[in-house]
Length: 168
Image 1 (cartoon, rainbow, N blue to C red):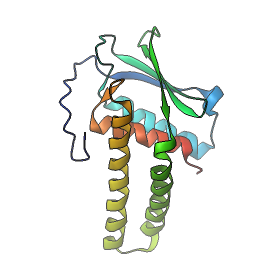
Image 2 (image 1 turned 90 degrees about the vertical axis):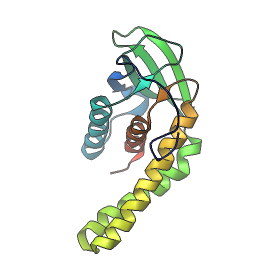
Image 3 (image 1 turned 180 degrees about the vertical axis):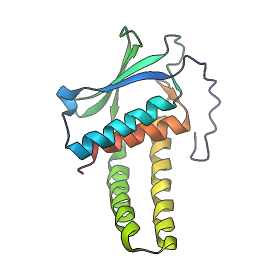
Image 4 (image 1 turned 60 degrees about the vertical axis):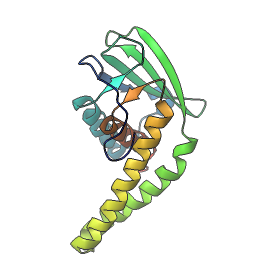
């Protein structure tokens, strides 16, 4: 899968999607009102359009519950009715640099909107999109063999992962 739309040839069926996504408040906790808003927008975007499939399983559509277990992101995947399908723990260590850099670039972007020229804003935004694409590729690679997602879904899930780390 690559930032140009992906090269993975996964065929997604109508049932290969998320219909619910919740956050485990015990492990993730509540955020500030701004953080909660960003999380809600990210969840809405994921549910609005996604491709999500468990290889060799025909249990979709799915409900995803994200949490933190031993400093790892927990993907608790269930059927839409809540029956367990699988849990996958994803180390966030490979994402630390991208999350940090993405946060810096986003801060620069939002500051530039107020004062910078259109060309400067566009250059910063290109860098922001490049990091977002890099994160989506990394996420798809880290999920490979456990969960299949298309590139846009990987981007949206990274947006949520970033929103979980965002300080507001």
